[in-house]
Image 1 (cartoon, rainbow, N blue to C red):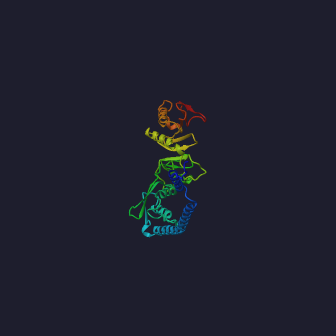
Image 2: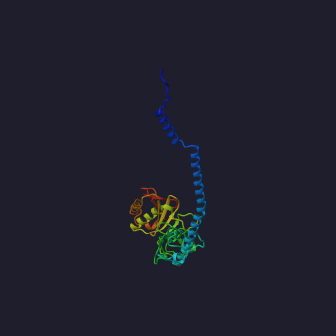
Image 3: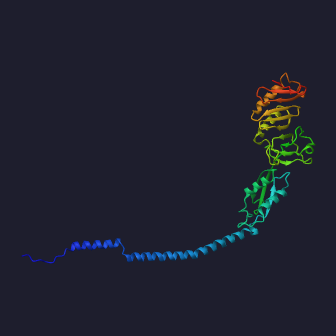
Length: 323
């Protein structure tokens, strides 16, 4: 008979123990988890307390820094000390300087002074000068001229090109324009920028009428809008042909007329080729029907291409001829 013995399989026991140890490492006990969570909560409270303390300190530092910068920006050593103006002709330089100084020192006290060479806005100042003074075509503001704590305002004034008057038939050299109605001066871009008085009347050859909105302030309007270059081009072409245009009148959005010193009126339309109009006029004036009769000529209508209408003063009313 076989005697039974107590036998232990150590290999299996070792494998089971190793498996339990591995599982224990992978899954922390509830006690270990609680300890980790407690440490995490403690760290969060510590960070929260630190933030609560640091926030007001940081705010005080920021406010203090801003206050220091603000006060420093108002110190005389950092303030623009002088404003100079150059380029003015008819416009008093003192008036421009006063306007710029008023814009710089407007009585307000922002956090950072706008009167330092580092914080003022030259583009805005230049735009304000152009908007306030119609006579100024362009303005530029630069810093450090003539000294480091100064600014210089360079302006370019508009040059008179023609007069605008509310009534027709006035000569460019007439001294009665201001008595019959207020006249104004405009530049070569058609911008009306100043009234005319008898003492300061500019020596301009041309007188313009119509072409603006009568129910608005006249100064600041642009004569004939974007169509003025068409008028000026025809005026130049006529002068090159030896004629002497003096008065321009815009009737509506399509047509305009030019009165010549030779005594008659030319009627034309916007959009026509100016050289073609001038060439047609030259052909008509040299034709047999009009040659030697320009003194009696009342108008030449060039609005219809190759068909040109004209009229003599001696003609009966409502009579027009054409070539």
